[in-house]
Image (cartoon, rainbow, N blue to C red; front, top):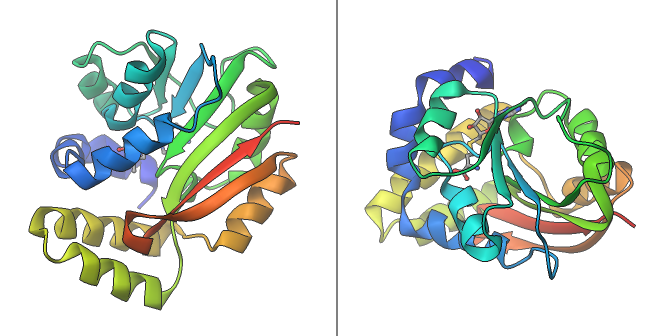
Length: 207
Ligand SMILES: C[S@@+](CC[C@H](N)C(=O)[O-])C[C@H]1O[C@@H](n2cnc3c(N)ncnc32)[C@H](O)[C@@H]1O
């Protein structure tokens, strides 16, 4: 199923499942990776706004949530966030306009990841950052991450569904995520494990 149809249908269950404290904690950690003094940040694929609210807490009204699924944007609107209906492949921003772009669990869903990352490179100012959290590949990572999630049944269910979706759409190793970012002209400063090894966070800068 195309991810656009999936997220049109699943906005309510998605919001309920991802309001888990573990997910929220990692959304907050992404906000901590924004460049100092950031004023205009796009949370690309914001969904119901889980990740965007943490960006707003960090920088205020310049945190914009962007998504192409209207049901997701309707949910995010209840949180009073500035929003844009957009597609990752053609961002409605001037070149060099943004201080940062965040992807929380989005890049893996995209059919044309290189095109999306080229767009991100275009809209970032020099020194601007991209901050991502994406699913990590590997059977061992699945087994260990799910074992770590099990004591928290709600998080274990969210993690299981995230794992199932990423099996269908794609996952990254540190090397493939690094290569995807550098291939778009971004300079990677950090890639580390997140969500008990089920995910990877990455920070990269436009030189
Ligand atoms: C797994 S959700 C992540 C939502 C949110 N960032 C979070 O952390 O909970 C992925 C979101 O990406 C959006 N999305 C997928 N492909 C997109 C595209 N090409 N352009 C814009 N949004 C897209 C989906 O509609 C969905 O809301």
